[in-house]
Structures are given as structure tokens and as C-alpha cells.
Image 1 (cartoon, rainbow, N blue to C red):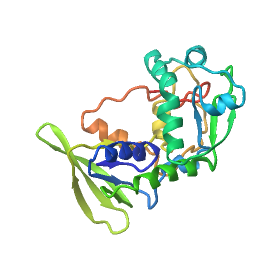
Image 2: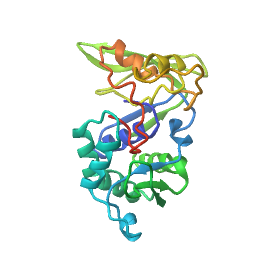
Image 3: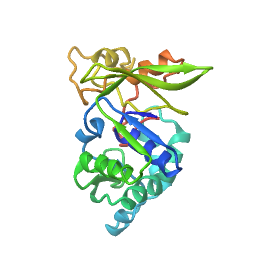
Image 4: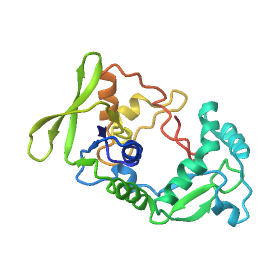
Length: 245
């Protein structure tokens, strides 16, 4: 059972489907994609055929040095894994599903261009993931349902409680495993202020920077179930173009 049909939830669904699991994806919205559809669909990837075709000499070691030097408060272990695996786990994976990349650009902090832009932006990216999920008969998508609570039984999470946002009907979905892939909290200005980096002055005025449903509801569910949250003041590392773990 996966809560959230954005890029994270769809990717998790694909991994489970490919292993033969029966998967149900629940989302508040009436369509897939989350606020990923609003993104530019740009991905920082290291050592791709597209780079080489343009004469760009990139390597995991070069990218590691750039990310560690310019990234703020990086996790070296995570950065090492990312630079070593972004080519096969992101580029090859998406190309294999039919996604096309249109260009490679350079972002500040990167000595070589490694920001890959998808043809069609974020909408093309999430559409590719969603269409790949639909190839499997063992998947169901439940739309317009908000998860209001997690079901706890015998020291484990065994499902979720939902409210149908159109009819008001309450329902319980049970599963062997539950994944929360509900996105960020950029549209909850209260949470943004609560987790504002301590070394930066909090602005007097904030603007929403994500989809309507990026309100941190999944964070609240995880905390209520005993989950521990970390690095909430690291939403995105713009110097490298990769998310903080």
C-alpha cells in the first residue's frame, strides 16, 4: 500500500510490481503526478551517453568532489552512492521506459554540465512512470482519498484509514506493508517556518512553492506512529541539483 502517486510513490510502486507484489496506490488528487507535474523535470545525472555525445567529460569522482564542496551539510555516504549509481538507476531506468532527454545544462557548483532536462518536463516524467505502472495487472489506483490515520496492530502498521474527499465515506485499507510517499511540506507555511534553517533569517513574507497537497500530512502521520523525522531544514540542495537525503 503506497500513499502518494507522485514520482516517489510511482517509483516505489514499480519496484514492488516488478517483484510480483499486489500494489494499491492512494492519492488525494484525482490524477497522478503530485506536484512533480509542476516541475521542470530536470535531473542531475553523472556520466551519461548524452554527456559523452556532447564531449562532456564527467565521472563519479568529479561529481562527488563538486557535491561535497558546494553542497551544504552533505551526507558523504549518500553522495557517494548517488554519483556511483545515478547513471543506471535513473538515466538507464527512465530511458528503458521510453522517456527522452532533450538537453544537458550546467548548474552553479558543477564543473561540467550534468543537469539533464526531460523532453516534456515534469509532466512527461511522471506520465512515463504512471504508464509503466499500468502495464502490470496487479496494481490499483484509488483517487480522491485522503489518508487520515495509520492502522496499528501488534506493533506494526497494517493499513490506513481514509476519507473519500468527494463523498465523505470513511474506509480502511489493509496491507502487508505501507509506504508513505506523500511529498514535502512547501505549501504548509507554518511547517516551513517551524523548520526554517537556524542560520538563516526567516523572511517576513513567504510564497507557496509546491502543489496544493504538499502540506506535510505524511510527516504528521509518520510522527504519530512513532517515526523519527530528520533534516527537515534541508528540502533541496540547489548547488548540486540533488535532494538532500
